[in-house]
Amino acid sequence: MVKPRLLRIALLLVEATSIPLLVLGLVYLLTGYQMLVPSVKLFPRPQQIHTDLVLRIIFATMGLIHGYSGLILLLERRIRNNTLRLIIEGIVTGLFIAIAVLILVLELIVST
Image (cartoon, rainbow, N blue to C red):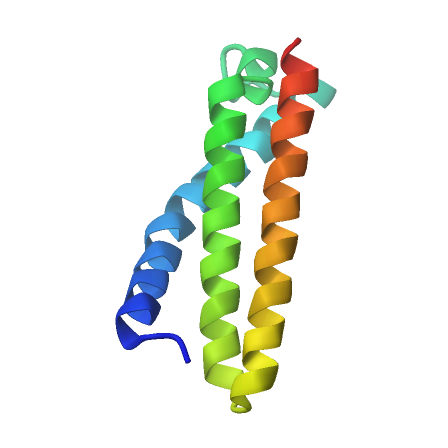
């Protein structure tokens, strides 16, 4: 069983990352459309914004934090069997670690 304090932290993380993720997602979407349709003038240098390393790292990190915290909250609320919940939490944790490593490797490959 996850401690109530950990669940409060998970909820806080989900709430704290939701609006910045929405804003960054919209920026990526709009700069992508602007690169495809150059007549649209929303951002001054869409390609630099869209391919910025810092924004990508922030977006990926916040997305992983948001997704992991949200899944932990969902598992705690929906699955009543403690054993099944622990197994699924372990699988989710392993998958998120694998995704984080994959993103890190891809960033290292792209940045070199």
